[in-house]
Length: 300
Ligand SMILES: C[S@@+](CC[C@H](N)C(=O)[O-])C[C@H]1O[C@@H](n2cnc3c(N)ncnc32)[C@H](O)[C@@H]1O
Image (cartoon, rainbow, N blue to C red; front, side, top):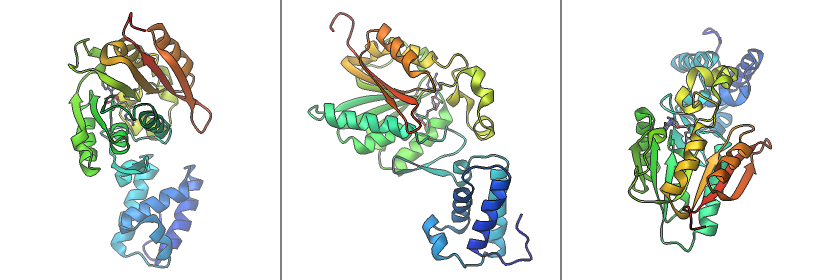
């Protein structure tokens, strides 16, 4: 830890902290130190370099050390600084919900492109977001699809609180209705209206793989947001059963899938009559998004 005797400037701490975290085996050490220092000093990351020779006051150094210690205990940096960026939207994050992932931006982009391309003629698009967590997907769609309204459900009360705070801070509250609901227990008459699109990034980590996740994820993120406590496919099965019921005739489903799940999920959807299947890969070449269309039985 940086000693109190020495005067530490911003750049001294960036250099020292980067080396220290790297030696301790942490990825993205420089970025982490920059984010922690920005939080400590109330500066934007870019401004750290403008003020690189600014010495830290005693209280500032103490605050930085507290934040650094939290990271050393493997708390994710987004929880420490209480925010993240998703699809160019600043969101609050804390232990109430999963941290939005960069790969989920591919799902957001696919949904937003789809709405703009296929549904531009429609008056209004009604979307159901299953397992909204921080609200990231619902908020991105509400912001970028003009004629949309969303129902965002989650089983977790505290995640819904966070999602509502994020909707308020991003000016999307009026377009999103947040509902506490257990999707796995949803009855066929669960919602009065039918939706044009169902979107979901559900808990898909198979229970037996939980132990292989990094300590950052395992120890800090809500387990109910990560895993279905089974083979990872529970939510996709339920979505495939409920899609023909919850969607208007010819409605669409967009889901995020885990490693090696996209073909299984496509098969589940096809078994329930899903058509126009499409699989999209993420930047690591992993099949990450599955799209399907559902017609009510007998009308296709
Ligand atoms: C993988 S997280 C996704 C959160 C957010 N949509 C995202 O993409 O970052 C899955 C979410 O599903 C919620 N969830 C878990 N079981 C559920 C259930 N039975 N019904 C509704 N939501 C559930 C969790 O609380 C969590 O917020």
